[in-house]
Image (cartoon, rainbow, N blue to C red; front, side, top):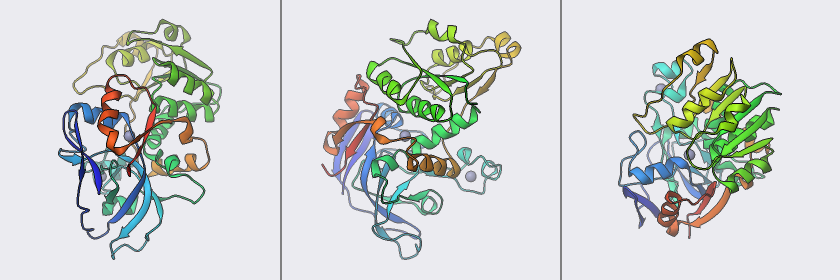
Length: 339
Ligand SMILES: [Zn+2]
Ligand SMILES: [Zn+2]
């Protein structure tokens, strides 16, 4: 099979790899829709990911396709089933799993290899996080399940009420998905972003206000708005600080965007304490949020046409990631793994 193999920092090569033999509990999926993600861009830039993968290895983690082979031990799936898999599965037995915090599982099993013609789904993901795609749902729509599941968690944690005002900082795929979900629950949304095309995408989703904030500087307009809640989807210390600074008294802030490891922020303790702020940080997904996200996609609340605006053949993936490093602003790109 053809696959994009990550060898190190900004080093991705197209290679022909043998298809591994299936072990007990595994199924093979022929990939029909693979999507780019900000996490993959981080992986490309760094050349590794401490928890998820060690090069040389296939990478990419958002995909959907059809089952092409089933180990004889697997009864629930058959060749031809259209499926989407999450990029991880919890163990179900460690302390965080038993507490109902499967996203914090001590032994989270990650799956990478979406930028390839096929992928082997590990037994644990087959049993906990492989979902059947109905005939009337497109594979590209279904491939949004994993990132949307993270956002479902993030928006739920904010406990938004209809009529409240949410500020979404960042107009990338995560910020735009948070916008769609908040709007769906009757919340009014302001989106702050750097890029006009992405802010246009926020407008099309129905955002009540968009603010263009060029560069990485603070946004005085946001400070004046005093939203009820803030969803930080940038992942930079200064936007974390502004998220905490701009929210109203008694407001909630979800520090959703992951900053570079080791980053620190400065907090005005007076403000956090005397304004009784609620500071949250949501991370990853659980089998429950994976299913909630899939249901939202099935219901048409989140559609790929609003988030997937680029398309590339697998053979051009290295150039695509280089262009993403230097300002390509497609929200998400569909990778055609057969070209
Ligand atoms: Zn992702
Ligand atoms: Zn666990």
